[in-house]
Length: 291
Image (cartoon, rainbow, N blue to C red):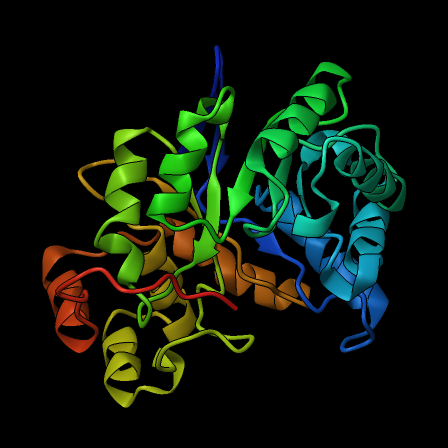
């Protein structure tokens, strides 16, 4: 299988990850059978979808516990991501929050730890805590989530801020505001994006392209489902580089298999032009969409 890869660079280390990962928002909360959700995450690992994204916020830790069950005995196959609440991101409180996440996940370390969104605690405090967590081997790298370009520029000016590995934001075909300023800025910094709600679900801002009959017709012409087309679009290369890791949630192994096919899809210029016509990029910068 041809797999689109995104290079995650931090300091002197680099790791190539598939451009499709697995989200866990609303998992572990009884919306689907627990065994089925665990099987879905494990199928993703088997298909090479190594990155599993979670957060202390998701189900008040329920998603982290589910991930912990899914990766038991398979930790070396997974790239585990979690996120800290802004109010838990102080120089000491972030340490405690991370340790609680590690306990729920049943692991000794996180591959990536994110500040969930900007808050009132000074960023330099959060960076200090992240640095201590890296030094202690509890996290391998850190990043942020829901940061707009001005937030990223502020972060980059702080000591240690340049070590930020990734920014996770809402991004889908009907929410393209980040393409005006944020995505180009991150490209210049060689910093990947993680796209949450890439299928415009879970209350995502913007229109619902999955329900768009024109998009459905285009997907059919390409031999794809609308979801596969949306995922292939989200992870498409720009200027020859794959720079987005999309993290859709899939609560069954069959759904994971459907999503994974997007890694094999290359959209031609004519298809991209049709999608641009249906869902154009804003003409000017707009506020960052957040769920």
